[in-house]
Image (cartoon, rainbow over all chains, first blue to last red; front, side):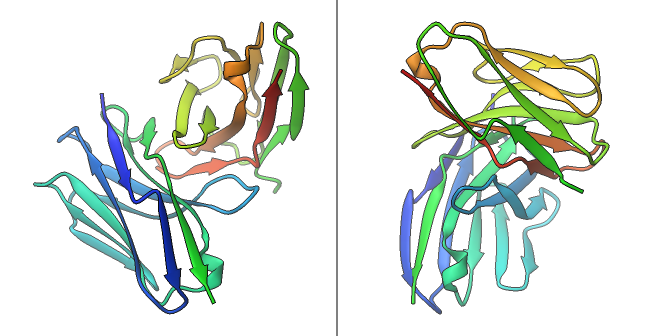
Length: 113
Length: 112
C-alpha cells in the first residue's frame, strides 16, 4: 500500500517569507496528490491538488510541484500572511484511483507578523 | 447548505462504554468517510462508504463499526471504548467522480 512521508513537522516563518513543505510517496502508480489545510478547531479543507500528468500547478500564492521520478511533491506558499498559519496535510491515493487517501503526518506552519 | 455536520462535538467515555458518533451531509454526495486524527500521526482512515448500503475497511478499522443509514448519514460506533481510541474523529464526504473530500468539524473523544 501507499506510504506518505511529510517534512518538516513544524515550520516558522516571518510574514512575507516563502514556505515549502515536502512529501514523498512510495507507490509509483499514484496519480493524484492533494493538499489540505486545517485551521485550529476545524476540519481539513482542500487548498490545491495536482494530477500526475502535470509537473506544477499554481493558484495565487500557493503552488504544488510534482517530481514523479523521485516520487515527491511539494507545497509552496509565497508572501506568507498570518492567516496562513495552520496545519497542512499532503495525501496520496491508498489504492488505484482517488477514492481513499493516505495522509501525511502534517506540518504546523506558524507565520509571525 | 450546512455541509458535513457531526455530533457530538465533545464526549468523555469510561473504558468499556459504547457510543455512536453521528455524521450527516446535505450535499447529495455518494461517498462518506470516517477518519481519526492523533498527534504526530495525521489523518488515518477508519472506514469508507462508496454509496448507500456499502462499507469498506480503511487503515485502522479494529474496534469500530459503521452504518450507512441512508445517503445522508454515516455513523461510527465504538462497542467497547478503550483509552487508545481517545482521538479527534472526522467525517468527510465526496461527490462521485470528483476528488475533493469535504470534512466536518470533528468530534473530540476522550476515553478514561
